[in-house]
Image (cartoon, rainbow, N blue to C red; front, side, top):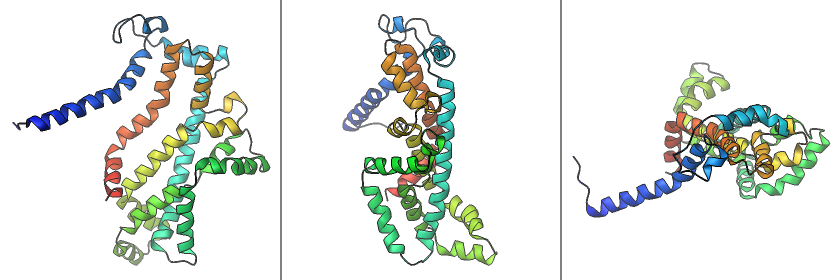
Length: 275
């Protein structure tokens, strides 16, 4: 059995304490979501009666308060999955061109990617809104999806990873008469799946938690994403802390599940990107 030195033991205890401090708000949120609102303030954290009443209220009875949470949950899933698939695919295609294909203006295009990542996102809100209005997409799912179908950050990350893939694999695939899509699907994507997992995970998380843009381009509550409706519910019905915490758990759960499922590729990609 390995023995810890006093200094090492103190460091591990400090790290454990910090981890518990960081995790406690999430533990509190999950536990409180199963308790009645009245018991949240009157009982200890793990005392009292636990039930699914808050979740039932959120998805069954909230329609009385004009809050179609179930519909908006499907809206968020549809929007986030569509954006994630689009960004992953376009990042793969454009990233391959930037990394492995020589074309005129390549250097200028790479500089444009870097410049776009430097500018704050809010600088593009007004031009994007004007574009969506001119296209007649205001208050539609297209306004939520179209501006985010490509990502300069995703293209940059994938191209940097593709650069590290030896060209010998591509030459061998071409000798077997592989098409461009065949090279991407059977060579580049399997060899760089860790970076693709990072791009997909961060894209999904960003699209899932997007709050400001839906407030600008959407008008109807039934077309809103889950995050916006939960925020309005929290503002109007903040005294019902149980259902609010249940909504927060539902909002957090998809990202946590994705991280657990793809944590292996995520950690591999992070280690590669930090080298």
